[in-house]
Length: 215
Image (cartoon, rainbow, N blue to C red; front, side, top):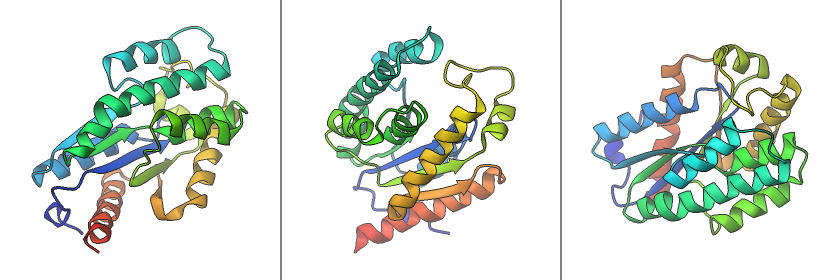
């Protein structure tokens, strides 16, 4: 298992946790963050939407408001992402911090590009423009079926979580397709595995980033 000290302290690192609703993204982000902080790293834990005050207002519209047209939905997520990267993510990376985000642009591709049947390349291109091309060093996809995700969420569902299982099945496949197309930048894990087992796999893969940076 890699030690935190093996990761160069002056190099910023960007990790995104992706997956369907109820996959355990926030749990795994928090576990990795705690481990890194124990090793003396500066860690920024954040999320999309809602990682900034502006993002919180956008999050309320997107997840707790009334119907939002699919293209408007995609644009609002991109607006949140643009502000998030400009004011939180990129400044943290520039000072050498590790940024761990609960969702990033792959969520837009999976939810709006695939599940909402918008052109996935258009949605991805919008996010690339919004973020000036910033991609994570590592994207962890926590794979969960629509049924398991619904069970985990219980009786509390936001506007997107209330979509039917067919919608969430398409979201899941969208994430898996993205990972299959670029396996070097993705780690796909079974979200039903014990949390500490998943955490150990994430830590091991994170350690490989240090090896790559040292080359």
